[in-house]
Image (tube, rainbow, N blue to C red; front, side, top):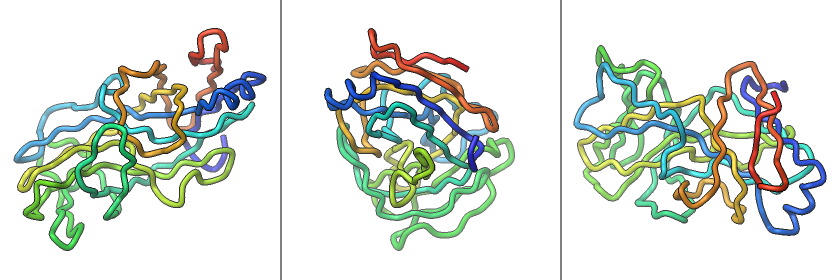
Length: 224
């Protein structure tokens, strides 16, 4: 483990050069629960067991023989416009994400936060669209490091959901991650996971997940 509590070590070995020649990238998505309602959902768990069909490519990296992805606990909330499948998400507004709090989104951007009501999950994140616009979408974003180097200049989206005016989006983190090979090099892209072969793993704080690639199937498996 490095300086961050969460880590995935990917061993590609000699297959790395083959993947490079084929233009494939090691890609990671995160299973994130989303619920949009007029008020925060209470007494309910919206965390998915596996990545959902609509997902965001959190990381897409050029393959090398040994790759270690690391990240911490800090999250951001972001706002952008409507996002289509295949589009790269461009974050228009960012703010600190606080678990168990509802943050308002106004015409001028993110505003104040207030505690989520009793019965709502205190580990979830809530965004209240008070901007007057229905042409916006939101999500969580986080930085990721590959072999000690930050992958992007800032936090990368891990999920995306449209939230119309006067509705509240509730976002739930999960310990489930999907790893797959992909021909595109962009992070922060909305995809349909049914079109790629995603292998799902559990990543826990303080324990590095070790995975390797089966070159005959191009699928990943755990070696931990």
